[in-house]
Image 1 (cartoon, rainbow over the protein chains, first blue to last red):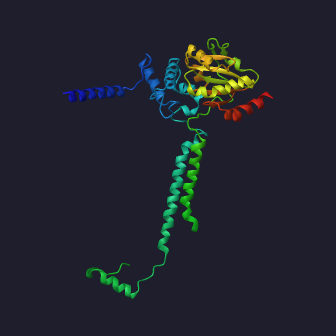
Image 2 (cartoon, chains in turn brown, blue):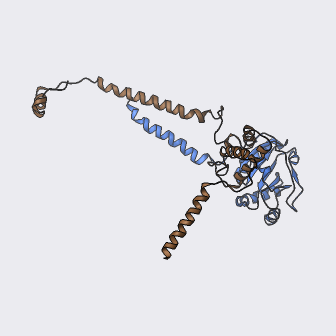
Image 3 (tube, rainbow over the protein chains, first blue to last red):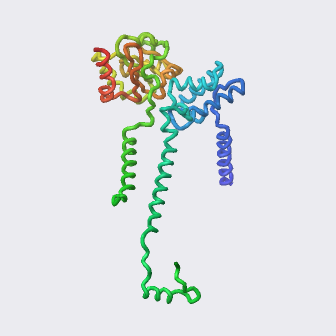
Length: 164
Length: 177
C-alpha cells in the first residue's frame, strides 16, 4: 500500500518538474506587447551569458543574465531596432557577447579556420593516396617453374589458369 | 624522405604544445574589455552610507592614474584583494575608488567597517546598471583609469601583488612621472 503511494508520489513530482521545464521562461516582468516580447526573446537567445559563457541569456538564471534580459526589453521599449539592441551590448561587452559572431578581420580565423583545415586535410589525403599508387610501379618478378607447379597443384582442376 | 614516419609524431607534438600553452596561459573566462582606451561611461552614484562622498564619472578625471575597484559585500574573492588595497592606501601609491556592485547599503557599510575602507570615494550601484555600462560581468574587477579619465586596463578577478607589479605599477610610473 505504502509502496503504491510512494511511486505515485514520485510520479507526481516528476510530472511537476516535467511541466515546469517545458515552459522554461524565467519569471520576470515581460513586455505588454506580445510582439515586442517575442522580439526580446529572439534577441536574448542570441546573446551570450557572460557568467556561464556557453548559454544564452535566455537559458541562464545568472543574475547578470536576468539584468541583460531586462535591458534588452528596455531597449525594445525605447524603440531600438534589433541591431541597435545588439550594438548596445556589443559596445559594452564586445563581439563576444553575440553567440553568432559577425564576420570581420578579427574573427576571420574563426570563420575560415575550419575551411582551411579541411582543405589542408584534403590535400594531405590526395597526396597520400597518390603516393601509395607508386607501389604498382615496382617490377613484378615472374614465378619460377617450381612455384608455378606448386600453384597449379593447389588450385582446383577446373580453374588452373594463373592470374595475369 | 626516410624521416616521413616522423610526420605524425611532429603533428602530435605541435598540437600538444599549443594545447599545453592554452591550458596554462589562456583563460577562456577572461573576456577582454571593450572599453580599453575609451573614456569611463557617464554615471553618478551616491556613496555607501558613512563612507565618503558620492562618486560620478567626472571624479575619475583626476590628472593622475587611479583605480576603480568593483566590489561587493557578498563577494568572497574581494576579501582576497582587500588587504592589498589597504596597503596601497597606507603607502599613498594610488587613489582607489570603490564601485559597490549590486549590494545593500547596510551590508556594504558593515563590510567596509569590518575590513577597512581603502577608497577615496564610493558609489553604490544597487541595480548593477553602471556595472553593465562598464562591461562588468563578475566581481571583483578593477579598472586602471588614466589622467584624462580613459580606461587604461581592466583586471578581472582579485588583484594580487604580482598583478599589481606587472600591470598597475608600470602604468602608474609611466603616467605620473
